[in-house]
Amino acid sequence: MKLKILLIIICILLTACSAGSDAEYSYDFFAMDTFMSINAFGGSAEEGVKAAARRINELEGLLSVTDENSDIYAVNHLGASSVSSETAKLVSFALEIADKTNGALDPTIYPVLNAWGFTADNKRVPSDGEIAKLLENVGFGRVTVNGNSVTLGEGMMLDTGAVAKGYAGDETVRILREHGVSSALVNLGGNVQLIGTKPDGGDWRLGLKDPTGAGNIGVLTVSDCAVVTSGNYERCFTAEDGTVYGHIIDPANGCPVDNGLLSATVVAAEGKLCDALSTALFVMGEKGATDFWRENKNFDVILITDNAEVLITKGIADKFTLDEVHKNFIVKVVE
Ligand code: ADP
Ligand code: MG
Image (cartoon, rainbow, N blue to C red; front, side, top):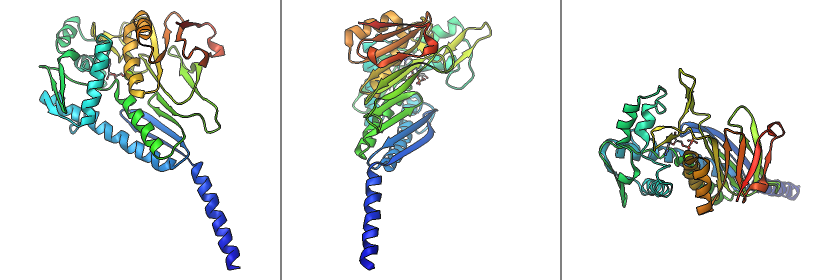
């Protein structure tokens, strides 16, 4: 009898263990000013997801522009400050991409963004004079990172908002893998990062949002990569004259991007690269973005234009399917 019970217990334990290795854990939360969700399979999924969420909160604590205890707040309010080595690394990375993209990405655009009211939800259209004056305090070339110390030029402010979620995604993926997770869909406010394939072995099917309305424009079928979109269709406001202004600013003129692009989606292995480039390519416009891709090719990109074109680089062209209801869009492969 005792042996029978023992055998039953062993059987239950064995089943519990095998169920553990196929574990699934999902978690939705709000961080970095946006909704996030992590869906992980395999290994210690629950522990991994919880550790990743803690990590994201920790990163927000370092990188937030508004949190008085953050590294970025200290730099912005003191003009120079010693920061954690990872903040220093992320700022250096943003400066490197700023340089490579000729300032299309500029982590010092914050004063201009602030004048448009995007930082405190009091949206307004600043005068040309006000913008010109603020642009005097914008210029990534006047930020110095020396070891762990970051110094700004007079009147400048730093904002890692265009790369922070991508970096948080990379950290999430790293932590999940450390916990044995073999398959995951991480969505940090529209920044998607994937580990492996779906648990059934099939590629993940990601809907690409239609920037002109509700629903998706098409589906991207991919695995084990990051997919990050930038556009001015979500965080935006309509001025009295009917013009729609979005939260990505062209540092060349201090105004919300208005160049014919509705969105730029970058696909690559690393989230922070995707995040930095999606913002920069959206600023650069169709010609600038496709030229940049031809010169670099260490990523793929999908551009949606206001004349109903979907431009997609050849590396992922066969992974994209246009939605039936969007057959009016023309898909062009960029080579
Ligand atoms: P989202 O945060 O909506 O996913 P992005 O990654 O494109 O989109 O980042 C947009 C954020 O980056 C803005 O909210 C602002 O904080 C900042 N930003 C806006 N324009 C620029 C720019 N040209 N260069 C760098 N950062 C920018
Ligand atoms: Mg970005």
